[in-house]
Length: 184
Image (cartoon, rainbow, N blue to C red; front, side, top):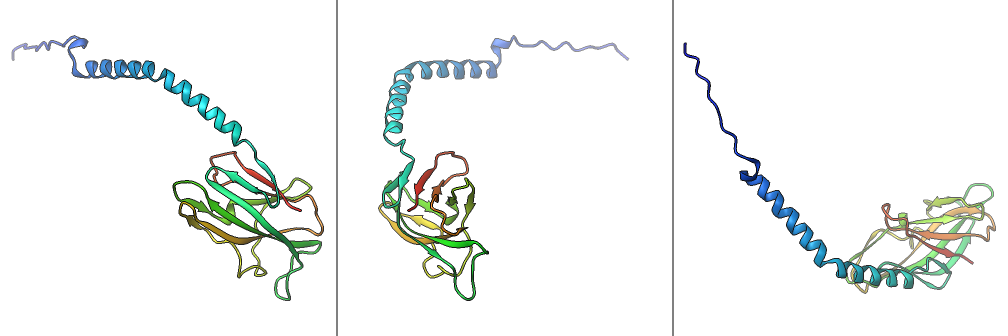
């Protein structure tokens, strides 16, 4: 048995292909960051100006409330004690919000009644209520093409006579931006 040991010669790191790939990526990254510095500053300034214009998040009933590409108008609010088959809990009434949603953008806009909550004068925010009182007019979910609009109702169960109701709209679980519309 011979004592044969193979000696493998290792290449220096600068002669390996992956080393040069990393160097090229780093150089491109630095070059790109330097040339985009003015673009980023201008874009940031333009974004800040747009945010200042669109920062209104509280509206009154009847005003067109705008968030992103969506515009919501509360046309009417009615209160109901229900019917013989469907009544609210004791001390409560159905608050039925008639609204219109418009797509003012250039892409499709999703709409869904679950994007809405109602806040009462006690600061409680509650989701829509399932009732048959507005079954013929209730807002469904779907998409609006650019320029499209949809009208419908959303029902909530609230204390009788509560005058501090606010409809809250948030179309994304990832965003804290929301609209608040004071109901009359």
